[in-house]
Amino acid sequence: MKSSLRIKIIMVTLCILLIFIMLKTLAILNPKEKAKYCIDDKCITIVLQYDRVISGGNSKLRIYKRNIYTRYFLGFGDYAEFPIETHFLLSKQLFNNKILISSQSIPIVKGGLGDRVVFQELDYYSEGDKENISSFDLEYESF
Image (cartoon, rainbow, N blue to C red):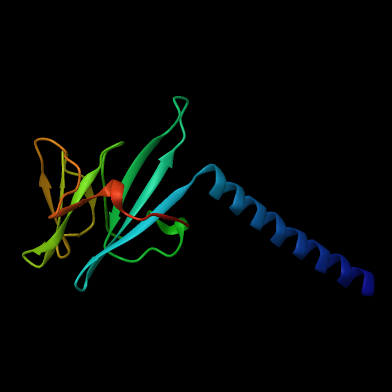
């Protein structure tokens, strides 16, 4: 009886350890970083995702109107996804009580971000200035 219980405890422990190792391996092989940007009480979360390909990899930027706590539920909820290797400018001031995001291409929007974000298309991309901050200049953290 005692050996049967001991075997079950060992098996459960090994399964938990295996799941932990798999999740850590996924995090290393598929890195993601996030940055939070706020103006007054309006906040968005920017997630930088790397897609590994033969040529070295591409980065995609997604904008969420909610705070992101884990990398495993990024497909849920409302977000806007920019094309590969597209960066943008974030306005330092609200525009009609919304955050203004300017880029050379309009992102694909999944869900409703219209209450928090306005997108504007630029003819040419420039670095951040006194009125805008570049997506390059945000402080990203791994998660």
